[in-house]
Length: 339
Image (cartoon, rainbow, N blue to C red; front, side, top):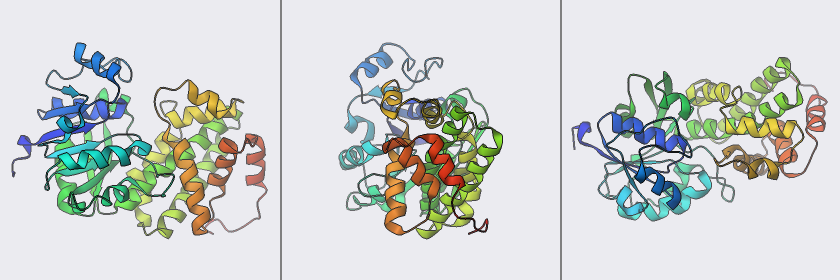
C-alpha cells in the first residue's frame, strides 16, 4: 500500500495516551480501532464518545471505533500502536501478533523496562520475530503529556526504528499541525531515555515534597541525566540521543510538572506517605515505580554506577527515609563532574 491515507490503524490500550493518539489519528481521517481492556470502560466509550476515566474533557472523534477483542483491533491493520503498561506488553503483544499480517508496522508508545528480563519493549517484541518483521517495529517517545496533545498544544516527539522506512511511515501518519514528529535509528537510546526519565521524575517529586528547592532540583536534573547517559552508552545507545526529545526533552517535562504521574508519586513520598498508600489511590500506572526495579537491578548487574537510581530504589522498596537518601547522595566521595 503506497497511499498512507488508506492505512487502517489499531491502538492497543485506552489509557489517556492511547486514547489521545487514537483520537488524534481518527481526527486526521484514519480508520482507527481502539482496544479497551476494561469492560466497564468499554461500555462507557460505546455509550458515549468520551473516555470518562482518563480523558473526560475531550469529545472523541465520531469515527473512532472501540472494541474489547484484541483480534478486531489488530487483524487487517496496516499500523498497530501499542500503548499498554510495559508489564502487560509481553502478554498483549504475544497474543496480538498472531492476528497481524507480515507487513504490518508495529509501534510502541509505552515507556519502561521489563522487571524480569531487563528488556525494552522493542527487545520483547523481537522475541516474536517468527510472526512479524522486526524491522517493522518502531517506538514513539518524547515530552508529550496526553492532556496537552488532546488539547492540540504544540508538541514534538521522536519516532525511532532500525528501519528508516518504518520510522518515516509512522512519522508521516502521526504528524499533525500540532504534533511534530522527528525520526531516529537509535531505538535503544530512545527507549532508555523514555524509561529512565520516569525514575528521575519520582526523585524530582520527592525533592518537591521535601521542600528542598530549585538548587536541589537542578542538581538532580543534571546528575540524573548523567546516569541515564552512562547506562545508555554502556548498553550501546548513541549518547547524542539523550540530548534530544526522548532524553533531555522528556526528562525536563516529566521532572517539572504535576501532570506527571511519576512526579506526583514522588511528591507524596517526599511528604511522608508510603508507596503502597500512594499507588492505592491512583487509577493510572506510574511506570517509574516499575522501571526503578529494572534500572536498579540492571545497573548492578552491569556494574554501572547509578547512585540516584539506587537511592530511589531504597526509598521505594527498602523503606529508606528520603532525607537519608539525599544526605547519602550528597556525602559520596568527591569526583570530577564528567566522571
